[in-house]
View 1 (spheres, rainbow, N blue to C red):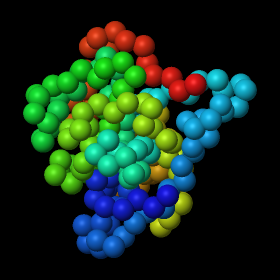
View 2: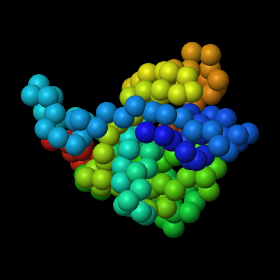
View 3: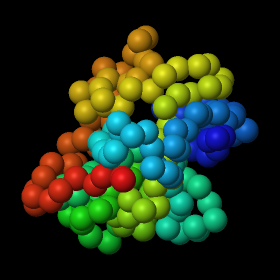
Length: 178
């Protein structure tokens, strides 16, 4: 899948500010999200920090790509253009945001609210072009950017986003895709 636009910069399309034609190609694992999956992998959990593809609530014909910021029960301190100052993520929904620091560059949950997990179509597992790198979402909450051994994105990448999430403000089950 080709990633176009500034919403995931600098993590994806990191040179977008200087070259507006630049796009990254990513590898998306759609198997566990679209079918029965492997017999030993009955359920797949969505986790904070994962980069997922989904049918955009604003335009269902469009496949979008964003990072999972909040899970059911999390309280999110929103940013513009959201009308509410905070939002609790409801059951079977996630809060998705682009990595761009400028909220005007990302059409995400701050615009259309929590996203139903039924709209999620896959998980990005690697960047193929311009330079190959595997993605490890597990380190995102620690401020470590997958594939950033040279610390191009700084020591504590997007710490401001993680600080806007109050985990499990309301106790709900985490979404599972069967």
